[in-house]
Length: 312
Ligand code: SF4
Image 1 (tube, rainbow, N blue to C red):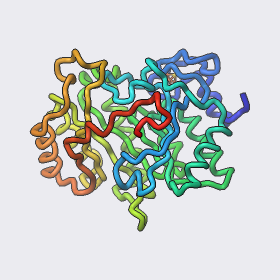
Image 2 (tube, rainbow, N blue to C red; image 1 turned 90 degrees about the horizontal axis):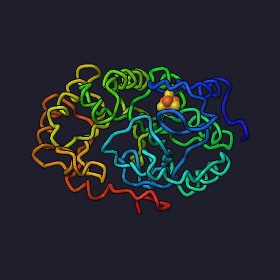
Image 3 (cartoon, helix red, strand yellow; image 1 turned 30 degrees about the vertical axis):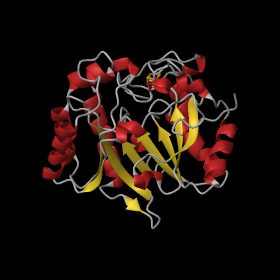
């Protein structure tokens, strides 16, 4: 394999402490850590996606790079086909030059941004792709679309490299984070990572004349069925620990996958009154920047990662 990592990233992958799991496995020997991913690129799909928030997708869509595997195992994951190894998305790309060729083809058709989706376990790979594009003369808007189970040091190392942070903030209660994502420390770890993003970007989300965001922070929160109270706590934490001036995307698109059909709470879509309750809390806390979703959004986000473009 041609060397694509700098010496520090290579060292991290040889004794992996990249994310808070700190598995200390050698990823050049295979995918033996929690995320099950080796030191390769581990890309499942590269495609144009038009379904993100309007400022993120822009008019032409965003070139999303969907990675296989994940360092969280959320029981309700909407991308479980690629994140939880039942399909692993085929890992279609093993060579960096092929990946760059594919991205450049998409960018040459008028797409301005690239999105790294679920990248916390493949940070050296993300950096290799950005540097590879820069070396070819391309500097697209780089979007880090993360579950936020990232080390603070990882986010700090992105300063100047990532243009837009698009982090989830899923839960504030350790017992829920443990039951749903197998990570009781998620609330604390994610908040620390998001605070570093806020430190770098502040509350401003700079938007170009064409309506596409160019730089900043946009925090996502997916409201789960039966968990409106938890969502309200999440919003209060963001307001108190960061600012109600941050940009927020409050998502209603939850759809139960086959993995949670027997779960007593997660086996259904969200009720409108649950979502409305959270929207009311958002407004009363003074959040004024961001997006809410229509209740039919759970129908539009149902990717099929066996297809070359899972959204079409
Ligand atoms: S990136 Fe993967 S192997 Fe490395 S510490 Fe995290 S879960 Fe473990």
